[in-house]
Image 1 (cartoon, rainbow, N blue to C red):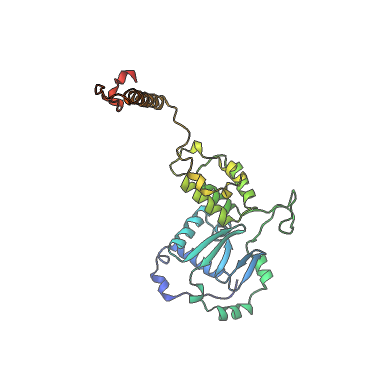
Image 2 (cartoon, helix red, strand yellow; image 1 turned 135 degrees about the horizontal axis):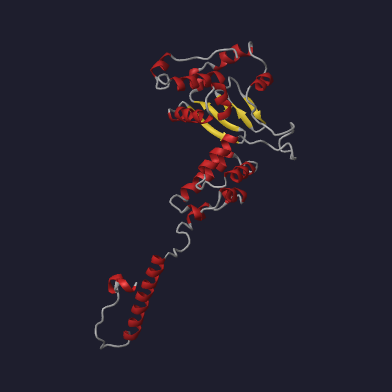
Length: 282
């Protein structure tokens, strides 16, 4: 890797500089992002100040665990130094204010005289669209050449789903779903579904594999909260309470029916609740 980037002197006063791990990641990002526009694949444009990443790739480059990479990236995102946007090929990392701190025109000219061609550079970096088996055109189907979806995106979507069960089947279902819908849309739908089901008993929530196989992200989202109460409670205590309430309602209805056409009826106190019954009976 050749060329250079600019670092402002005020960086030494930043929170990132005081954390050696974040500073190492930050400088690696600055030296790794695009210096000119390119295409990761026919659907994914990568602009100057951006790069297509995966936790495994960054972890290998920095010799740290993928989970550690995720935590570090989230901190930089919290500090508003980068943004992270998932898609089917990986995650687009964007350095905030890239053009403000880097002289892009001079940078492009300087690097163009020293670095390999775009195709050579792309071959030396992380593959942006990986495939299982033989190299084939995107969209062509076969036993050994199906598209390989970024596992980091699959895992993030699974973790966002409100029920964690049958993970193996769930991950395969998510991979299949990502061939029908873009990752950002699917992740947004899953997060909204999880919010709608917050507080619900997990046994009344569909298993993740079932949800993704049924393409439930296409559902009318207003229906996701319609069944929040779940099935009727059939515990002994609940049954006793329903019986008690039925007797109360029935007794009051009978009294109203008897007295509705009579003027001279002794005043009788209506049944009002559980205090009118002896506890041993119910």
